[in-house]
Image (cartoon, rainbow, N blue to C red):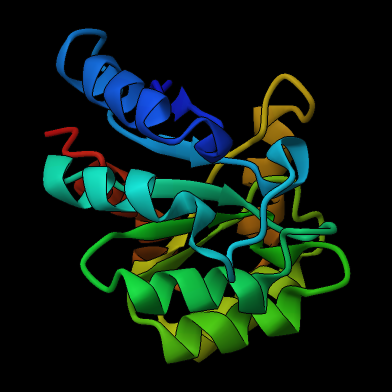
Length: 179
């Protein structure tokens, strides 16, 4: 498990201070943004203060994708505005926007696609082919999905052994500095 600070950018500087506390005092190593839940758009400057703080702290930002307010191309706009911040696009735009997620990742090399809730192996295989295995990360979205099921989906993607190792853990270990 990796602790993420789940913050609402609508609270401005209060959220920025809480992110710093979460990282420096509580051991969080990621910022989680959920545009759908907090009613903001990634194409607006709403999340910019938190993004600047994430850059300063040297942490990645996990962003929910695939629903209203969370379109992958809008996340791409935010990623391009903060090219030094690793953006982890949760759900890879699944179900209806996976092609757009890949397109955004092709434009912004700081976008990494996260496999949580993606239930179709060919989508993961296509993402690896399009942007490389180094930028695709396993996640289960537990407890809403069983980790073993998500692992099976990745194994059914028929990646090379080296690519599968990267997706199932090596990439996350690097991004989260897990040794």
